[in-house]
Amino acid sequence: MDLDILWKKFLDRIKPELQDVNYETWFEDTKLIEIKDNYAKVLVPMALHKKQLKDKYNDMITSIFYEITETNFQMIYLTNDELENNIIIDTNEIGIPNEPFETNLDPKYTFDNFVCGKSNKFAKANAVAIAERPGQVYNPLFIYGPSGVGKTHLMQAIGNYIVKNSNKKVLYCTCEKFVNEFLKHYSDKKENGYSKTLDDFKNKFRTVDVLIIDDIQYFEVAKGTQQEFFNTFNELHSNGKQIIISSDRSPSDLKKLEDRLLTRFSWGISVDIMPPDFDLRMSIISNKIKNNEISVDFPLEVQEFIAGICTTDIRTLEGYINRVLSYAAIMNGSNITLELAEEALAGHIGKPMIAKNKINQLQQLIAHNYNITVEDLRGKKRKASIAYPRQIAMYICRAYLEEPLARIGSEFGGKDHTTVMHSVNKISKEVKTNKELLSEIEKIANQIR
Image (tube, rainbow, N blue to C red; front, side, top):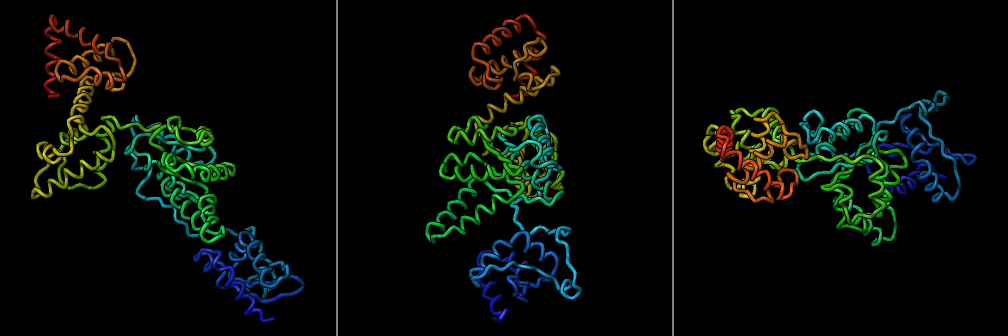
């Protein structure tokens, strides 16, 4: 029997079963050197090859070699050193380097450049704990909040930290991509009548140490794929692998997901990220200006203007900064001023946004003047040091900004219209006799106007 011909048949047979990089790394330079007494000896380039073939691929090799020879052979992998010096290398003491693997992570997302504030402080603390001990602290981690508040940044920061500080295999994927890949592999299986392509999909998602799935709410419109994710989740979780998930809603609000999935989401911890408050928005603007090494002067009043009109998400905030910079450049390198910023963003700020942001600016001013926080104004605390400034703020919203009672109640933590009306009526009576209070209120109102 010609050993070279036999081994070539084997290599031709096993090559389609492997990714190109794995075949080229572990099989291409191997050689069958002896068949004797039900043993097949294979010469490999290095001890690393010996360990990898023995630990990871031996079952596949044995099975395919049996198909070709119709004989059960026990495979023995040897290096040149072992043959020439009659020694045995202990593969248990050999480390295998990570195989090339596409994590889909963007290296720009790190904990260092994640700007932290009250709205995301708890989420970041849990993210760091999980990054330091994946699979051991909270599993799964479920991060939720509206679009553009930093969920993806935080998830990828976890992944990048783990990749940098360990040999763990991390995979980041949007839910939409997970669904599309599964459907493609499932379709290929049905058309070709074999399961290899579906096995490739399972191998990709179930052999990682950390799986990060973004925008899990997409499963609501792809119900057929929930079963596959359920199986993937179980496989990873049972093996102590870390799962990180994000959504634009809390688990309890994902009404169209199966109960068994929602139950599993509750096994770990759920953390929310809310839209950034004024102070955090200012920090984000300052950080972006600093990190991008913007050479032109970006005045504080322009930063405050942008932070005041954009209360929803970080993405829009960054977009406004870029638009102001671009507009200044187009205007022959004009200096950035408040007037230029207003002109640059004039077509991007709708009336509802302006109305909402006037209330937000008012809350910032009241909070500053009375040494409390905006969260206090929007909260339920009733002590006089908070309740009285809240009543003044509601009065200004109604009397000077002419806001509807329902909007005022909504912007102050969901108060009903009778509570708002009570506050408005109370301050209305006071300003008739308290000229000092009236002067103070008019000063604040003029600042907002």
